[in-house]
Image (cartoon, rainbow, N blue to C red; front, side, top):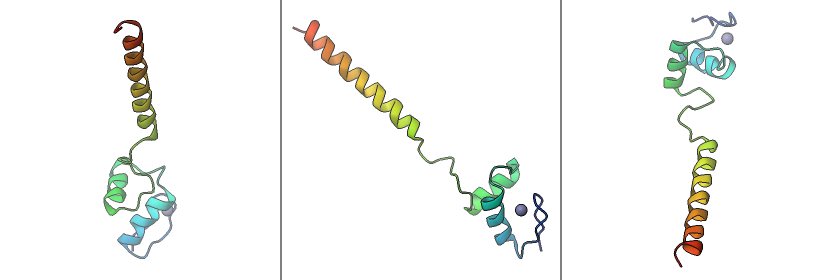
Length: 78
Ligand SMILES: [Zn+2]
């Protein structure tokens, strides 16, 4: 039976242990444990989920270039 390194809980098996780590100690996991939990698929937060911030950045760039193009067409293109 594995014992939790973080809170001394005794877990029934390895599978339940990784689930326990992911749900109870996701913020305090070390690098190796974090990867084991991530591989197991029980980590709540996902690193490869698309960040909403990037969507805002792309939208801002798109809006900027659209505005620049309109400005160019209106003041330079004619
Ligand atoms: Zn624990």
